[in-house]
Length: 327
Image: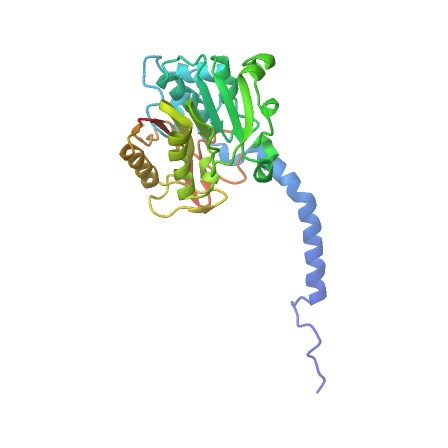
């Protein structure tokens, strides 16, 4: 009887055929995927049924509550005060959580200082290359120390404008003239895990989604406390934003390049700050009051709406805390 072990059975595929198919698939993927991705990004079929309210149509009364809650919500974008601050700092008026963070920080610091920023000293942490807050505060007459991570750490954030190498890398066009900006804004490299001892006596400080990048949950919480007690004068104001886990008050991302804080972590931080003699604002998670609040952007993240996002399998949004040094 002949040996047929080397003969392919009907319908089988040889290793040579499999290798050929794999090479062809790789070639097709290299050529087809960029085209398909561009088409998907241009048409955004997953957004066809998303209702995106018009901010002019849905505008709310000037006397209504503004930034009442501690988390990003579409309702804030409809308020005239959001538009005013956005125009002042040349922030695009679209539903994006990063823009909400910048308005949140600016609004709360200006409010806590009763609008009297002229001559006040402010300290910004992890300002990056696109954040307009230094320019916004300088326009109000504040003297700003803008900081970002040392180059050895910050290089990983260089793409996309997420890292600033100096004051001239910060935006100010349309907000304040560059000569005036240079006269009021200086720059230092600062590791947020090791704030220099000479950075003291500031009237206010801030960070926008930075302290979740310090290595683990505890390091971020320690930074917030240190920013209050090491850098501010008594009565000074700190305002920081970060990532909030909306999916769970138990499971989360607790270490790595980007962690995600739970409600219980923020509540614990506020309790710790108050026990140390400081004033910390109540932390309230905003309800989903507008349809777009319910949309969760998924990787690869696209153009707005981007108020909530899927981050490591958890739904996340931006959240802020406000603290006044009490002793």
